[in-house]
Image (tube, rainbow, N blue to C red; front, top):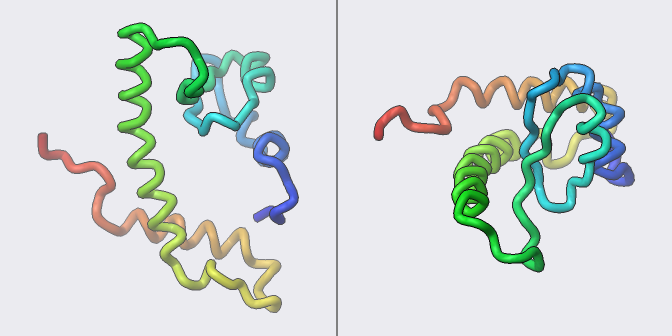
Length: 121
């Protein structure tokens, strides 16, 4: 886990995630997550919602934006499940060295819950 003073961009670069991505992979992110240049060099695309001040979207762009938004809902729900673990609210100082492991365990435990996406259509 990183302190609050690191930017999203720097966190992404230092995380080692880029080395796990392959050309053709795609990342979904918020509007302010500007890592186009980092990903482009590796053949990875960045999917972010268009800004409100952008020109009107084409029908194809509108459909794609809605599709991405519908997927982001599930991602936000997954984040919420991890945040629901009270142990992550305030990590005692004597456990600070274990913060990454605590987060990992909480994230893995969410896999034993109900599915985020229903199979029913």
